[in-house]
Image (cartoon, helix red, strand yellow):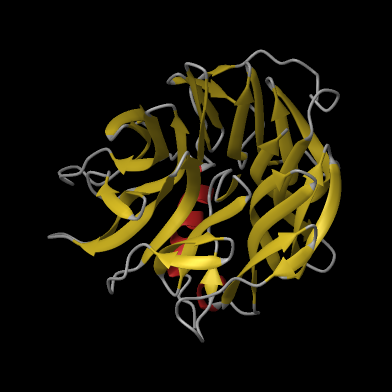
Length: 352
């Protein structure tokens, strides 16, 4: 039985964060989808407001393709040539805390089983950012968790990153040359409590990043610089209460983006000398915050930047009529938001 409490805890944190409005400026809007010059792929979840079910899906330039059956979610996407790879999971019925999750990879809509280093147990890909799957030199890498152990799969074959008895998970993977980077977290007991510690693995070797309770949701490598996004504890001593603050680490050095509201970075991307990070209702560009201005409940999960163009995906209350139970899949391009005519949310992004 897969213990999915780690994923539930992180997702709960994510959704709580989104109800805080940032005191930041708005980024100028440009009403262009970018579809004329790019192929924009968004992986996420379609929510049926009649049957109250979820299905893993992806959108190519706004057109949806369902890849999973009932009770499935999509968490990552990668396009290699003409092949579209989507990661996610399927789950059984029951409360979220007691569900059994099984990891999935869909190649062009066909489910490809993932091997487990722990036969008889379940795998999951709880990726929070835009790159828990990537392709490099014909190989496909996936970050996730196998029987509560942080794991990276290469072409479907698992490599366990943490073999201890602690709960751990990989969230994001990036391949640069022959180096494989995975960001995630490892649980540990401290003098005060049980926490998760943001962790980066390079070629299987872990480096702890966080000061206290922390998560590393996204990794991006630009030349010799390694960027990791997530959250860190803005008050690690706990003298006035612990506080999750949106943070990214550059070569291991933390840079806090918001220590006023509970917040986190869900995805980080580097375009030239510009560093972009997203989380909740906020885009940070080189540390400067821009409010997405779509109202309470808006959340952005993924960002990609190409030659100054900024693409983002998530969810926002854009549907007409608005359903108080569900948001619309949301896509942003250069400051303008475009809502899909469907309920659901975008979790990952790939732009060609």
